[in-house]
Length: 134
Image 1 (cartoon, rainbow, N blue to C red):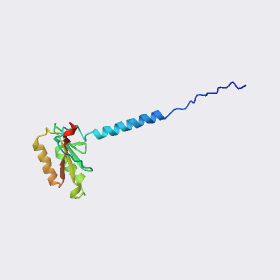
Image 2: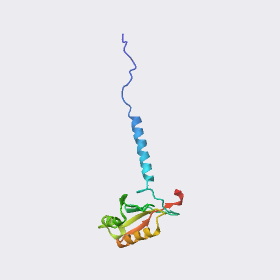
Image 3: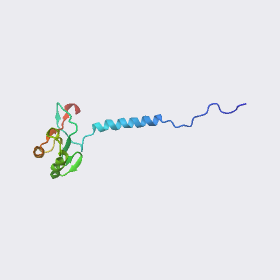
Image 4: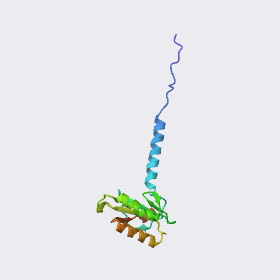
């Protein structure tokens, strides 16, 4: 007579729940990265239209007048040197710089930055929020 157990319990680890968890975390971080702003949080001005520009350098000015070039904090005097290095060898039509300027930054600071960009033959694009993003 065979008195052995007929229904043996499998002692294997089920990986499907772990892979589901990893997949959900991946989706979460992808969605959150699209909502992230380059650099520090900047209160951008609102417009009714908007266009995105890919592959461009970015300059951020926060309301406390901190300058960042491609998410790296620099002094106001270093902005020109950093942009010169970034734009070296690029043709004039590829010298696009996205300006993330807080709406509370004095206009004079923005004008000085525009002057620097003109000297470097760069094409400034001002980043804004659409009114839908309120």
